[in-house]
Amino acid sequence: MPFLKLFENKVKNTIKEFKLLNKKDNVVVACSGGKDSTTILYLLNKFDYNVQALFIDTGIPHSSEENRNNLQDFCERYGIKLNVVSLKEEYGGTLGELRARKANNLTNCALCGILKRHLLNEKARILGATKLVTGHNLNDEVENILLNIFGGNMQISLGLGPKSGVTNDKKFVPKVKPLYYCTNEETKNYSKLMNWNIVYCDCPFNYDAFRKIVRKIIKRLELEDSMIKENMIKNFLKILPELRKSNLNNYSIFYCSICGEPSRNNKCKKCEILN
Ligand SMILES: [Zn+2]
Image (tube, rainbow, N blue to C red):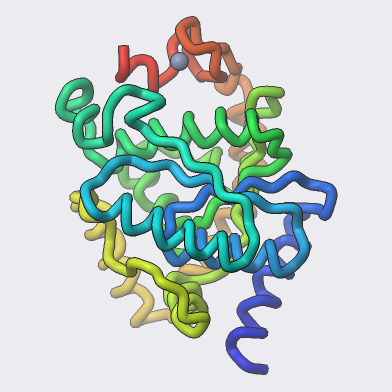
């Protein structure tokens, strides 16, 4: 079977295996303009899901604009509705400005992750989304599991897996990852074969050195066992339900006293940073 077809089947099977989406879902895809989110946006549209795109403009010089333009052209070409929100309008500054003013102790990626996570959930909910799709692929998941183990924070891993499953709350839009079994190389190949305009470089704000080391370790391990990522994920998925069950008590949900969004504490991480 040709690669394009194989790849598409892999995504279809992942959606089926984990019951990620159904045709009645109002699907919002978190889009960065990068290869992964563009690929899953294209495929869900092709598979006849009810999809729209949501782009967060972080105001990273050149990069945000280029990604946004690429995504805009893409959405026009395929007739997909694109929603754009910007950090500057929502939170009063671009990623760089907010970091300089408010969060010197956080890495760019950590700050970006916190702000985007909040904004994506809030905006997807306002758009009436029943599912929020992200472009996380197999490499991202394996890196995250290892980073959480090395960082001594297995709690964060409870939120991993193809479907967010720790909290059922009316203010949380369930997050799903249809590219869960697709490797970085595979989505790269797929998007290149489709000839889309995509920026393939790493985000210019990414100075996350530790993640890069973990990436190298995984590459090295793959020389010994080419299926190491798949095996890790399979084993992780075996223990995840038990992990979640035994930690349920630590997962009460509060509403942030400042913004009213769901949070693990009285004040959410975003407001802690911004106020
Ligand atoms: Zn808040």
